[in-house]
Amino acid sequence: MIRDITIGQYYPVESKLHSLDPRVKLVCTIFYILSLFLFNNYYGYLVAGVFLIFVIAQSKVPVSFIFRGLKAVIMLLLVTVVFNLFLTPGEPIWQFGILKISEEGIHFAVKMAIRLIFLIIGSSLMTFTTTPNHLTDGLERLLGPLKKIKVPVHEISMMMSIALRFIPILLEETDKIMKAQMARGADFENGNMIDRAKNLVPLLVPLFVSAFRRANDLAMAMEARCYNGGEGRTKMKPLKYHKNDYVAYMIFIFYIAIIFVIRMVL
Amino acid sequence: MNIIETKDLVFEYIRRDEEGNVESISRAIDDVSFDIKKGDFVAILGHNGSGKSTLAKHINALLMPTEGALWVNGYNTSNADNVWKIRESAGMVFQNPDNQIIGTVVEEDVGFGPENIGVPTKEIWERVEKSLESVGMLEYRHHSPNKLSGGQKQRVAIAGIMAMKPECIILDEPTAMLDPNGRRDVIETVRELNQKEKVTVILITHYMEEVIHADKVIVMDSGKIVLEGTPREIFSKVEKLKRYSLDVPQVTELAYELKQEGLDIPNAILTVDELVEALLKLER
Image (cartoon, rainbow over all chains, first blue to last red; front, side):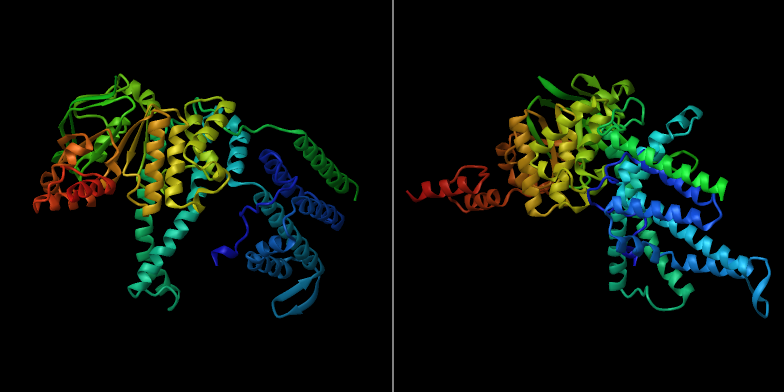
């Protein structure tokens, strides 16, 4: 089941989007998400949609792979749509008991759904095309100015990249412990919610113990390799803007400009 | 010239109760003195709890002696100012390959050490390439460490240390979690580094087969050095080794038993070839 979730995964192909600087992708994703909430008419969605299709085409990530990511959040989508549909005040065009549907409600629900879908696809495109390490590197550089107000930016990004590295190892370990417990008669599949939750305790305890042990080992290994915080560290792969990165910024600014025009004019 | 010198080294694990009173003291290292020459391949043997891993951590300044002193490359490990210089000249490889790889890509992991000591970007790439080549892992440079076998991961870890250009590598039971193939690869890599790159190697292990090529063997038992000498000297004392719950290599044991039964063969046979030769001589 865990493997079905494609959000946050990296999709290894070579494309223009993959080779962009992570800072470009981070900044553009954030502003793209903000732009989705800037306008309130369907023309805006058309532009945002066209832009998204353009980016998907550039990324070379298969469309089916992208939509598989949406499946995981379909429940969230449905709940949002239903709530917006029934709870938006306005002139009812259909009524059943306390349930009312208004025209405004329909518009609002549809817009919300499109927004959410664009938001999820847009942000997962970033993770599909950027390796976790690149992402944390980009984040470290972007948040760099915060160091002046004593935010431990380097430490945060180091923690993130270590966490990402250990996810597959801990998943494997969970699987191993689960099988070992099942071999001794533990039952993780039957029973009601409370029983199942209770059955997880013997799984979580050894997992935590082993995670702490690993953390201890890793800390020692890092110290042995002269890790001493971010001070005086050099980078093997320093981030540098190339021509394509500036082109990407230009295209994105163009997109934002159109969105503003639509907001002002229509 | 000695790269490592120790004098009357003592290390105590102190257990305290909640109020901070000393509950019990256990001596992990008890009055140990030895020297290691530059360029040597030294093996430290001992069963579990003999203090060999604790000793290894002292050489990397991860632990500091309770009494006595240890010098690495002339730097005293008890002085906190020397810690980073010591770790630069004495790298350490640990037992569990998963828990010492930091990067999500092989080459990034190898670059981690040089990044920490502030090597310029261009030189990091050269060092990474060179050290991956020296352990025979260059073709895996873009792989994720999660997809490698245990032996390969351990070689990546060794490359990560080599990239820092240390004068000495300490390997703390690097093969304990590996299968026989991985074990052979790792040991061969280490021997090669010792011979070609002239790196001093300190190998901590309890597999006897791994120490027969060492220049010097140190046997530890309950925190003390009990035997010290060439592999041949050490393995001629079969009875004594057994008392420290250590085995000798199978061939050595066979030769020893044959000798006990009255065959006229030399002491301390280390390899199959040697035994064959000795037996052929008897025939004639």
